[in-house]
Length: 257
Image 1 (cartoon, rainbow, N blue to C red):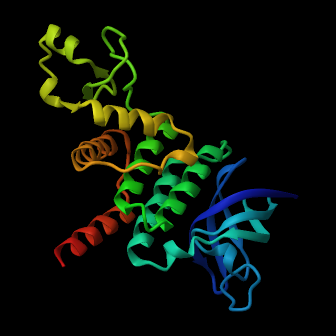
Image 2: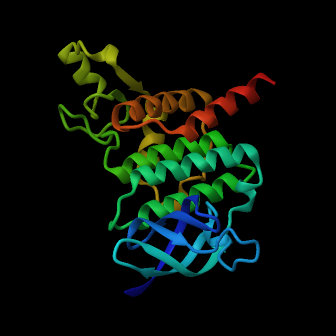
């Protein structure tokens, strides 16, 4: 058996037996992996923090024939401002579950882990609205998964897009001129992106991850992009997320107070 050291974040944890936990880790080099943390449920365990969701750091793993076991961990980030706030915790749990869905074993998880890190840090920033963080996270997640909207050139004339009609079903966009020339019968099934929405979406898909959360959104653009993410999830995600339902129920409840 070999020992490996990985950079990663705990996506989820569940109790195993009386004292152990099984965790799911998103790592830079191994993608999503599962590992056992022996004795993690004991109050004085040195691995207590290593078995908590949101814990990010360096993990030393014993690689067995069928599974990994955590031998040691140096946790660098706990995201306490997220885990200590009920609403932010709900957003964060959704981010973790979505990252688990988007990641694969034995894959390069660097881009997804960076997205998760910067998104959780943005959640901790009181100056950035939580709903904006979620919106940007989801749109950039589509990019990481390779199912992002093709919004940089018209699918018909190949001209650079500044506004146009986006087809969720086809995943592409046509400019207004081509839509008019074709008398597109599918326009009613498309989502219209004006110049502000198109520019914002293009920025989110291309900006360096460290610059993703450096802007504000006007309400019309936010509504358009929110509508896009809802339709895109339904089209390209093969499952529902329990944490998303909890989050949306909580947001709805808070809005009625």
